[in-house]
Amino acid sequence: MKVFRIGLLMGMMLSAFHVATAEPTLQPGQWSVAKANEWYAAQSWIVGCNFLPSTAVNDVEMWQSQTFDPATIDKELAIAHQWGLNSVRVFLNYVVWEAEPEVFKKNFATFLDLCEKHKITVMPILFDDCNFSGNVARVGKQQDPVPGVHNSGWVSSPPIAMMQDKSTWPKLKAYVQDMVKTFGNDKRIIIWDLLNESSHTDLVKATFAWVREMKPTQPLTTCLWADVEHHQWLIDNSDIVSFHGYGNERELRRTIERCGESGRPVVCTEWLHRQSGNTPRSVLPLFKELNVAAYHWGLVEGRTQTYFHWGSKEGSPKPKIWQHDLIRADGTPYRMADYHFFRHIILGEEDLSPDSEMPIVLLPTSEEKPLTWKYTESQAAENWYAVDFSDADWKTGTAPFGNDDPGIARHPKTKWTSDNLWLRTSFELTEEQLKKSGDLFWSVHYDEDAVIYVNGKLAAKLPNYNAFYWKVEMKEEVEKLLRPGKNVIAVSVQNKFGGQYFDVGIIKIAQ
Image (cartoon, rainbow, N blue to C red; front, top):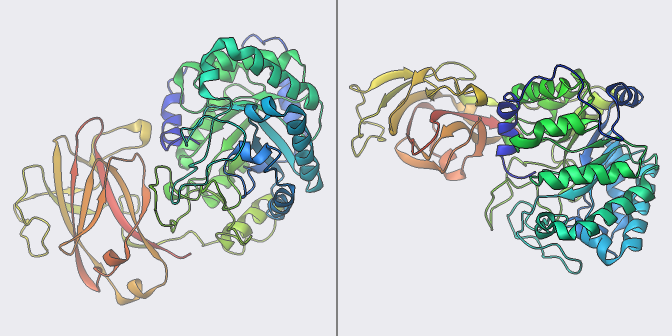
């Protein structure tokens, strides 16, 4: 759950690893491929979520004695069960165990009781590198969420300094082995996830050894995400192979195929990134087709504020398209169509909203159909974006523009190799298209620093870059610039470093 590069780079990086041709030598205590598959075959399709109660800003607040909230946990697990979910992935935190080990284990046991009540299994996570807040994990009052900021109170487990200082590892080993000794035979725990998105390779290897010394009856895994150096080691040493997948269907399929070369079962332990098209309706059918267990991020709108986008700024308004989460604070679905689809694909009920994600296309990207633009790579005139500007002497090309980069599915129809690009095109809209209810979004794949004008007025400034088609909210004042009949869109985009690419469309999505 770090930043958007996690999902975007997975497929590209995994393709660089060697192809497994035989089962590697098993580590002491590691399950064989046969045992892993026999275990997986005995499970129903595992579909769950990364779970924190809405009242917790992080996993310290979830587990410590002064803020542990079993009433909210019970209520929200009931909602998860109602959606058809049958498992949850939960972050533990070392500092709570260090401060009050018996209370921590008691609270975790209570949590397991509540999960069992709602027919939900548990995947605990022992360590976690992520630290959105930049704070050092400690028990006590946690910081309140920063308004508008994604996961602003999240802290690592343990503090990063302990991960880097091997003199502290005996304490970490004691924590790991106490938890596994206490719960290593608990049938309500379906699998242990040892480290979340860890770049500390030595600690990963040590934790596998510490856990296996305790001989738990559950399988072990640690997710693949964005650290090339030890991905193959993780594949070779996990009982079950797991990964994080925030990319589109094509990227996910490639990653799953790469993980599947191990011969072991595959679990996606984080997904759901709506603005890139990683949605329940686009992703769950793939997981079901390929028999991949899946845990999306997260459940209920709460203090983590993970419905905001990665990189959201303080004071940002609530986005029209949530990045993560399924349920509003009042317990109602963010999108009723998602609720129907979860119950359809997990429980076999009728899909009551089969066309719920079909947007109205006002300006197509090249994904829908080729679109012709006028463009220049020479310095454009001062009024180049005006409606009545004459672009007769500009070149003509078909979107997308840029350079090939198959690793992130960039396949331009018009080459662009200079430092700057200016583009113009026109498109027609009808009264009916404009009157239909829904929210307007740019569907844009750009690299980098795109500036968009509509009918001669500044409409959007998109800083930095992305590496896929991203849905960006259109401001209300920009919507008012669109009119029946002819509309003119003008764009400037730069190449400061790295790749270069551009394509844009306009869509309307009913909520």
